[in-house]
Image 1 (cartoon, rainbow, N blue to C red):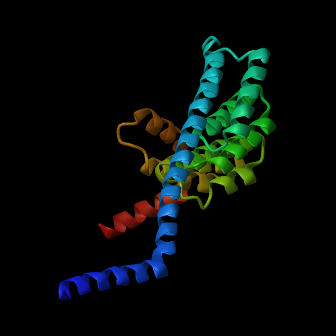
Image 2: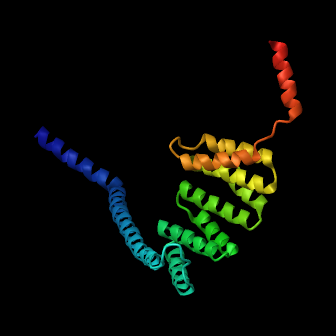
Image 3: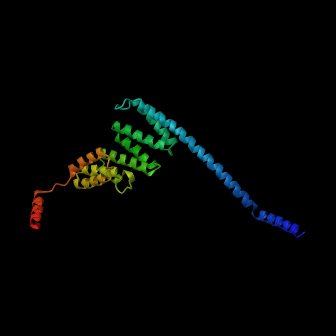
Length: 237
């Protein structure tokens, strides 16, 4: 009998608990299940958009690959490529395909000597890059376009005070180029030396190019200084 009463008390206690907490439990279950299916739907949506964007991007590449290596893309193809790029930028702006589309448009604009249009595309790419490395790639290219347009102060602003990560050597070399164009040989030398420090040991071509640039801005030791150093050495001996 005691066992039976205890069981009834347990049931009553469960009923009271359910009356007090049942709605919250059901709500928690609904939210959990709903959140799962909501996340799944969002994931499916992203995958579908990415797949659609890849098709548009591939069509862009097909137009480019039809052009003979070394030739400038003709006007008709540039229009088609531009339209496809705009589709990616407007409808699929959160994908890397949109970022690469903007880089391609910028490259074509540079080849057509339209530096203003190239700067617009690279600024868009920089503002919409999903990763730091992508942003830095766009930033560096934008800086070089601005320098080519004669906007050296703006070019330097773009590459200064930036955590360039694995692109640090490229950023330092760009600084050196911009300083040299400004006629600031000392600053150019310092920047090129920093760039040399970051080059991979096996990258001989990049090293040779930097050595050439360094030789053009390396400070020249005057004859007076050389004589004074020689005298000091003789006195020391």
